[in-house]
Amino acid sequence: MHSFRKTAFVTLVLLLCIALVFSVYTAPYFYGTAFSYQDSGARNALAGQLDTLICGSSHAFRAFIPEQLDQALGTNSYNLSHSMQTMWGRYYLLKKELNRNPVKTVILELSYNALTRNREKEGPEGDIYELGRFSNPLDRWSFFFSAISPSEYGKLYYDTIDRSTTAWKALFQGTMGLQSTRGYLGLDPVDQSISPEQRETVFHSLLFSVKQDEQTVSYFEKCMELCREKGVRVLLITTPMPEKTLLTYDGLETVRGWYAAYAERYGCEFYDFNLLKSKTRDYPEDTAFFDQTHVSRFGAQTFTADLCTVLRKVENGDSISDLFYKSYSEMEQALLQKA
Image (cartoon, rainbow, N blue to C red; front, top):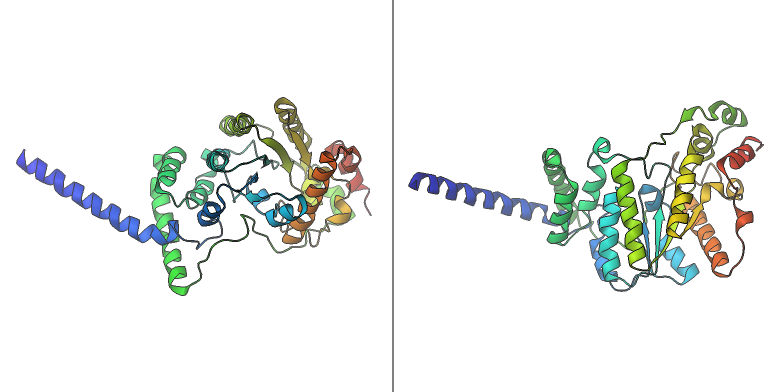
């Protein structure tokens, strides 16, 4: 018995020492800004002031410019989005910020795959990013145990060590600093132009998955219910994509129908900027996009301006029906006829 107690004591001390070393080594990562998504300091500094929150995946991360939004609408906004953000991650972060800010409006970005993504198949990448956005240990551990499965602990451990090593380098090189973009990060443009012949060739050549993921949908609905409980205005927004993507995939109209149905169910607004009639004119394929799903920093400026225009019209009681095509079919025919 004495030997067992001694062994247990030594084991406990060893585990505590390992935990201490791990905590010290990872401190520059969890409390620093070595990576673009690490914005806890910026969010903490703005706590109690924000009235508009933007929440979504990389499509929103790269498209909504809070400073431009604030200048045009007089809001005080923040973009909570990050790459591969899961719907559970959205709910967790949204709940935290709604509880400490006088939020009036929440913009939920809904990309073509927002409700079909499967966390188990994707792996932990999106949740790893979110884990790095919490400086409060209680938030971090709470999110860890709710989002990361035991089978992913090993991968997360090695990933955290690797990111911490990068953070130590940034600390010594003096490259860390408080994030000042309110959550937005732009991308340089990459030409996505296609010829009229290519438009015909790719048209509906791929069928997009229209099978919703049960867990993802459940947390999306939790986001909607949370906003309704808080009395917050919700805007469901789909950001622009290049012509090739819009023409290639069949099934996008089905997805648009899901979002329109949710908007009706919850009594909120839904705007799909892929159906914007001025898109072919104002979003040049050679400068407005980074890849087949994300806008560039130039496209983000145009999109944010267009969003502000739509919201101002709505607030003034003006009709916006003439600004958008009524369906993807109508938009596709316009693209196919484009010179």
